[in-house]
Length: 305
Image (cartoon, rainbow, N blue to C red; front, side, top):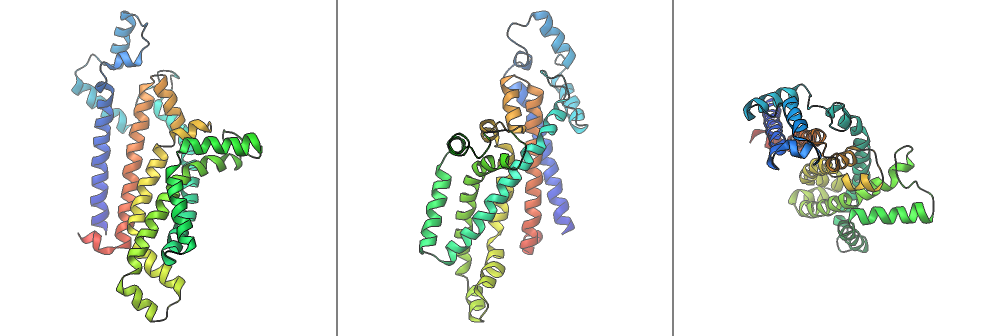
């Protein structure tokens, strides 16, 4: 198991290194980065001073090594607008995004897993049809439309929930429901599909023939073996929630990373954008590492492959 973890950890480090390289190249792909950073009415003297101050006159290899050294120390430079370390500014907003994504994921799992298991156990029943219809609806409704409708109903019409911001637990309800709707539908469909496949296996029929209680057969024998793809999707989906909460945070004025990065893009604050891209890549790698370890724990044969 230790060799398996060490191999996966080494692969994650390689991915992070490649992410750093891509992040460095991003600022050059769109042309001269200085023209992206500065306003269009900047004088040539100010451009040259800016280029010299940030080291853009150096060869690209020197800039790359300096960038890697700075990234390893957590130094991505200062925000061009707020004149503070870009990493500190982004990390300061990460707890808001983490808390919102965590609540949304928990809400999605609490709804999706029982719905998927019961739908598979009662295939073609009214509950199964209702569950399938709800998952199709959950995946079809755009997140921004659902968020706006929730604001209209619960904030403007009923006046029971705040329209946006972050403060009490009431502020979590509408943003987390908006984020969880699509995720819950996806998990419910996957859980139902995997459970239907597992419930047709011989060992399930043997467990039932031995007289085991239906809940024990479903949750101890069937769900554990059906959970491998669910664990993989959990890691990927949590990464998407953290990196893709931009629209939800903007709609509900949630002070998280997504909304902050949108503002940074509009303000052409590229160091902040670089930090956001880099942290998202690191987070994806970490979540995939955790998923691989959980995968190996659920199915020990994988660690020996």
